[in-house]
Length: 232
Ligand code: SAH
Image 1 (cartoon, helix red, strand yellow):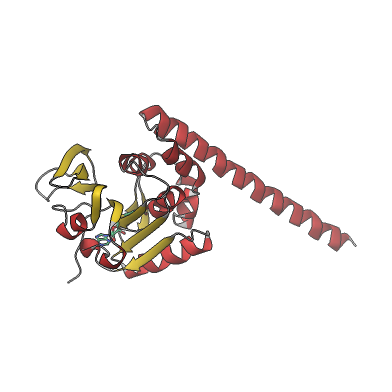
Image 2: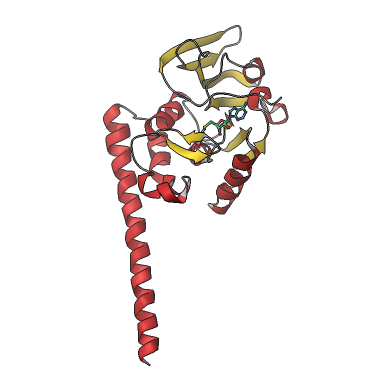
């Protein structure tokens, strides 16, 4: 009898603990959106909605869960990082997304940015060059129920011709220049955001607008990203 009540009591404490931890993540996420995003000028309602509703703590390694909502990038294994929340939001807002859009992301990493995009648009196609990351991001996104995101393991330089054209493309690794296949796979009127810069000069976040007869690029601000690599 005593044993049974002890069991029920322990179960109740564990459950209460889980509820409190969950509420703590929701609170931290709300704070993140207010202080790191809105106070710094992010205004797009769809971007704010997505940042508020994607559980960032589910995309970081277990030992970093308590730091998931802090104002910075975090390691995700294989020498790669999940970007600072502000950069994720800024890049998302820059793409001026609509709910009907079809989007390509290069650099799946943890899958967090893909999940943010997935909350906003119709479909997301994302490519990761490191197999371990591609496999874990795919199962994480499936487990969390993101059924409009498709993950592929490969070199994103070539884009995803079978799924093109795209309304928007986001590259989350620093490239030397804008890959031509990505420009080719963008619709007329399509937008791209990509960090560009070679080793000896500063990497800038660049926005791209593809017009019928030309491509308009704009350097936004200097950023630091892990490098865009190529498959041998
Ligand atoms: N968007 C990710 C973080 C990106 S870190 C997230 O939300 O977690 C950049 C990622 O780009 C790394 O995982 C790196 O392996 C990947 N990457 C670098 N070059 C690539 C390429 N040519 N094709 C696809 N992925 C690439």
